[in-house]
Length: 391
Image 1: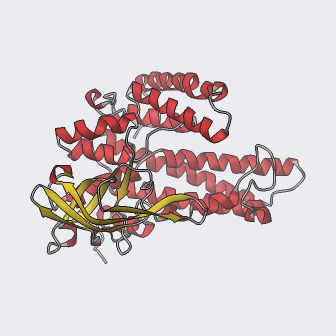
Image 2: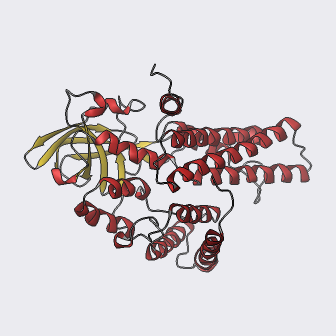
Image 3: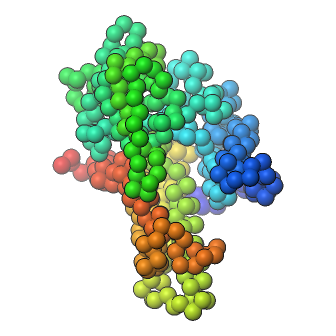
């Protein structure tokens, strides 16, 4: 595992930083296309993502013929680091989940049909995995897909489906052999969200945001050509998607920046005459050390990918630790903000040093549930990493 850039990677990092400076940071100053904050930010993000796509940087490790840049894994890692350090958008919704899965397991026809429009942002995707009775134990899912000639007829329900109300397509796990062992009777399908029989209902979260949805399927017909991989082998295709979902540097960088904001907040409070108790200082120090550990776990994952492997147990370690760390950081913000932490607005200091403790605390509640619960991650680490028997 390398901690320093090679000369070639250092030169590449400089190229990325210059691109970010020229096209993201300066664009943020010059962008006057809209008068309101939201539309202006959305317009700025769209322009930025279009520029990334034009360079092949939305999916940098993909072949150029599919809109990528044929980069090495380490070049892609450096790109991701620099984009997250700058706070710039890095990808379109679900691109880094379903895209690599289609790249690894899809046919040439499926790649040609789905990957280019995905990169151009012409379609939005959502993930149809969790069900009301199948979340942590995902392999127990009951949504059925019955073969009828050249189509599957899908019936069932998915829940906690992020972005389903805006999605054009869903990548969905369905049960195609109810008599097989639960991991061996599942197929991975690409489902058109505009197909007859699909119903989407909103789920409003505790932070009053509409991200999640429940989705119902009633005799929805999906062409067999939209199956990724072999019939009844979809579980193994789906685990590839989860491995990509759990392995990224963004979580570590976000955690570090959050701790830096905590330090800035504590320093500003002290300067304003409100002393920060030593117990809080120790708590912030603990979070700072933990963010370094989070980054090291990301380095482990990228080292495996650089050698041509697919991280599994290591990705679970990275996901579990990072999601639990985000909750601990939010908890420290609440402790430090005191009674101000109960307000759903910037806590205590009305300037650049303020923190929105309550909002972040609520937003991190699902962190240890989404993309596989911490309990499931610990099971994976125990069985696949430590060789322990299944309980």
